Image (cartoon, rainbow, N blue to C red; front, side, top):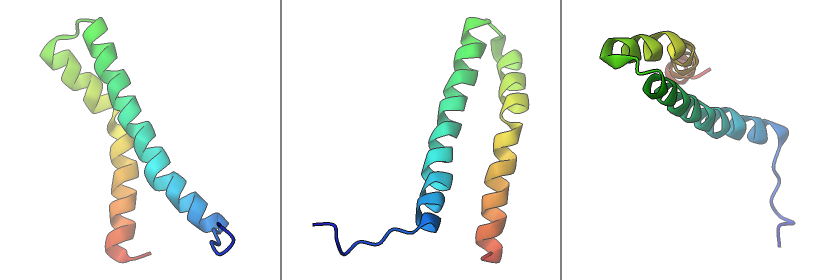
Length: 72
Protein backbone atom coordinates (compact mmCIF):
# COMPACT_ATOMS: atom_id res chain seq x y z
CA UNK A 1 0.00 0.00 0.00
CA UNK A 2 2.79 2.46 0.84
CA UNK A 3 5.43 1.06 -1.52
CA UNK A 4 5.37 4.10 -3.83
CA UNK A 5 5.93 6.66 -1.08
CA UNK A 6 9.54 7.73 -0.55
CA UNK A 7 10.19 9.82 2.55
CA UNK A 8 13.65 11.27 2.92
CA UNK A 9 15.48 12.17 6.11
CA UNK A 10 15.26 15.84 5.14
CA UNK A 11 11.46 15.62 4.93
CA UNK A 12 11.25 14.01 8.37
CA UNK A 13 13.57 16.66 9.82
CA UNK A 14 11.58 19.50 8.24
CA UNK A 15 8.32 18.06 9.58
CA UNK A 16 9.80 17.73 13.06
CA UNK A 17 11.25 21.23 13.03
CA UNK A 18 7.96 22.83 12.00
CA UNK A 19 5.24 20.78 13.70
CA UNK A 20 7.22 19.15 16.48
CA UNK A 21 8.94 22.29 17.69
CA UNK A 22 5.77 24.31 17.07
CA UNK A 23 3.82 21.95 19.30
CA UNK A 24 6.56 22.14 21.92
CA UNK A 25 6.39 25.95 21.84
CA UNK A 26 2.62 25.88 22.44
CA UNK A 27 3.18 23.43 25.32
CA UNK A 28 5.79 25.78 26.83
CA UNK A 29 3.32 28.68 26.64
CA UNK A 30 0.78 26.61 28.60
CA UNK A 31 3.48 25.87 31.20
CA UNK A 32 4.29 29.59 31.54
CA UNK A 33 0.58 30.41 31.94
CA UNK A 34 0.21 27.70 34.58
CA UNK A 35 3.28 28.99 36.41
CA UNK A 36 1.87 32.53 36.42
CA UNK A 37 -1.50 31.33 37.70
CA UNK A 38 -0.09 29.11 40.47
CA UNK A 39 2.31 31.79 41.69
CA UNK A 40 -0.45 34.45 41.66
CA UNK A 41 1.89 36.74 39.75
CA UNK A 42 -0.72 39.35 38.81
CA UNK A 43 -0.93 41.12 35.47
CA UNK A 44 2.54 42.70 35.54
CA UNK A 45 4.20 39.53 36.85
CA UNK A 46 2.48 37.44 34.20
CA UNK A 47 3.67 39.87 31.54
CA UNK A 48 7.24 39.62 32.83
CA UNK A 49 7.06 35.81 32.90
CA UNK A 50 5.81 35.63 29.33
CA UNK A 51 8.29 38.27 28.12
CA UNK A 52 11.37 36.72 29.72
CA UNK A 53 10.58 33.02 29.38
CA UNK A 54 9.13 33.26 25.89
CA UNK A 55 11.95 35.47 24.53
CA UNK A 56 13.78 32.40 23.16
CA UNK A 57 10.65 31.43 21.25
CA UNK A 58 10.77 34.78 19.49
CA UNK A 59 14.29 34.02 18.27
CA UNK A 60 13.22 30.67 16.84
CA UNK A 61 10.22 32.20 15.08
CA UNK A 62 12.33 35.09 13.77
CA UNK A 63 14.87 32.64 12.33
CA UNK A 64 12.15 30.79 10.46
CA UNK A 65 10.62 34.02 9.15
CA UNK A 66 14.01 35.27 7.95
CA UNK A 67 14.68 31.95 6.20
CA UNK A 68 11.24 32.11 4.56
CA UNK A 69 11.69 35.72 3.41
CA UNK A 70 15.20 35.12 2.04
CA UNK A 71 14.14 31.69 0.68
CA UNK A 72 17.17 29.92 2.21
